[in-house]
Length: 306
Image 1 (spheres, helix red, strand yellow):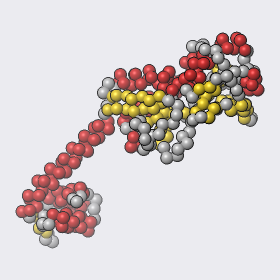
Image 2 (cartoon, one colour):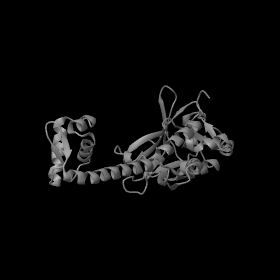
Image 3 (cartoon, one colour):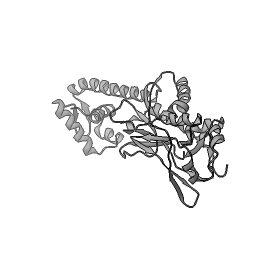
Image 4 (cartoon, one colour):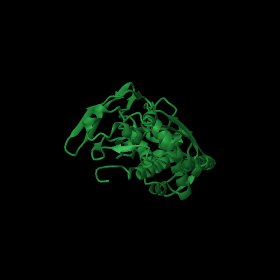
């Protein structure tokens, strides 16, 4: 099989009138350049260059082959430019998986704006809280909370400092009162989230000195995080949710943050993919947009200082 670099050397040598000059331009040693030319001539079964100690000229076969070598190199370069241009274009299909609550209530308007900016892009959005099998499912990238359990995945942070908040509706608090300490949660109906068959009923907090943990209970749980948020807004109980998911509800007064003086569990949002080759230009632009938007939401996070 003909080698690209051997063809380059041959064309350069013909243009510059010498193998040594071509070797210098291509940053090759004379021995490597000579071996490359011999390899090409051996594969073609002809002498391309007639060489002496002082001069180099194309043979008749070399003059004939030079035209095809130039055309082949030009075609390869054109193909490279087409691929580079395609990578810079925001077009094609972007297949994205996202958590149910974040995807429906936070991500959707951002994607709408993203597609308005890039009208040639088609988005395929899959919503769900199960970790997508990025090696089998038809998705390019996935947004997921928490650190990935599969170390083979490429994980890029989108909102690395995102945390959970404890929250309930004003109506629920009017009926049942506000918890004043972690232990009080045992007297409240806690809305539970279930992932992969496991109920997340062990809630952890921190007071700056130690971890405070409690196994909570309630009369309902769901494997859809959006359902848990909707239950909380409807006054069904207390939820422990990602700040990104409930920030708009808190700001609108639909939910009230409880025990803001305590540190809450981290819930970093990451962009996951199976291979770095999937980090296309549209994916990189989308990640940049998500980082900016998530940072805006994160500024309103309630804590002990504000």
